[in-house]
Image 1 (cartoon, rainbow, N blue to C red):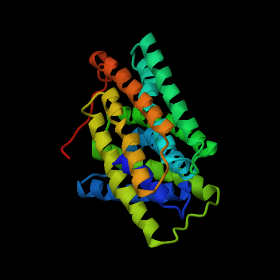
Image 2 (image 1 turned 180 degrees about the horizontal axis):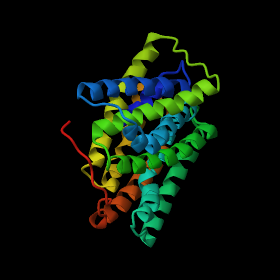
Image 3 (image 1 turned 180 degrees about the vertical axis):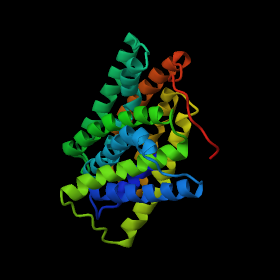
Length: 284
């Protein structure tokens, strides 16, 4: 699902990244609030407080990523974000008492080399810009923070409670930024609204609900590893549906990145205990 999100965002070329993020987040928040209410849930401050860090990180992630794909290639935006498992090991590892080994550093270096190949390889394509790549790097940190805070939030709330509260917080954050800066939030056509609904209810909404449900049932590193499929799906979809150029250097770099990250996470997985969190769960 997430692999298609970047292509949909790029295809909505009549709005910029912040406008797209604003509307995607309110659509997702309303949808989750309806589901939450039908389940018999009552929105309380306790839920919003528990989801506050993840909601802030999520708003930053969505805003930065949509801006990135508007200014650079889908391949670059998704491949830079694919470094998240490596960053997660270096951040979440010490945070939760997990040692980082020398081999982890070397495999991360290999992955960074691969990303460099992708970025420099794309510099000859018309869709590339350094600004977009910088936005993608910032998004990487927000994306990693979202995973960590999401895991912590799921220790206190069930999946529906968490995603509902987190979505509401994220919308409020992005609304403060958009309205506070006087940003134009106009959506000019029905095609763009179709993309917004697809992002809010489908690729983005359902995708984030499923990953947060998985946070309560799987190790953090394992769920992170599954996101390595995102750039593969995104690159292929962008080439097929958007006609975006994919040069040989990008493909070679992608193989290096995904291979290094795959080995890195695979070598850690047998000894990686789940984070020491007790998950609050209810039937969905």
